[in-house]
Length: 200
Image 1 (cartoon, one colour):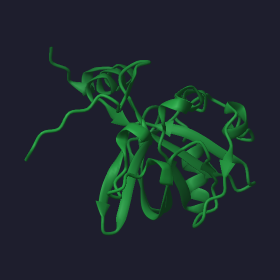
Image 2 (cartoon, helix red, strand yellow):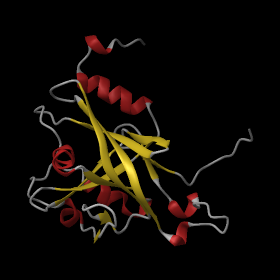
Image 3 (cartoon, rainbow, N blue to C red):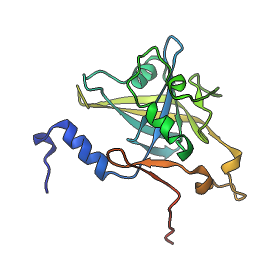
């Protein structure tokens, strides 16, 4: 099978990409509106960029009507956000925050999640997340226009919060205790509990 994206619908291309590019880490992004309403939404087009400066990126695809997600609107307004790592224990709550809620509603409340005050930025963190990256905006790169076009958000990490309980004696993060989940295609997810090592 060969696919020319220019000859297919964006929804088909999106479906194929999300089934093929797997597993994808999930950026559970918390922001805050100019009116002070917390927002929380998951994005699986996400990864780190570099370590000097420490930076990461995620991509927020436009809504079906072509408008920007609330996450993007909030970051445009105040230039701050938090990327929370998603453990298996709150996977269902994470999925609930992907719903299409009114801008005035807090996904924290809708999903029954607790807010935790951040240290270097204004948006709250997810208390149930074992790792949070507090970020300041570097740049938003628009890729396309209209429905399913993207906004690539690049952030400088100004603080990393890690729960002590998931740190091994060697100072490394224990992946078993982290128990992060990843995104597959459709409604499928995976866990980081099944791993193997290869010597270089």
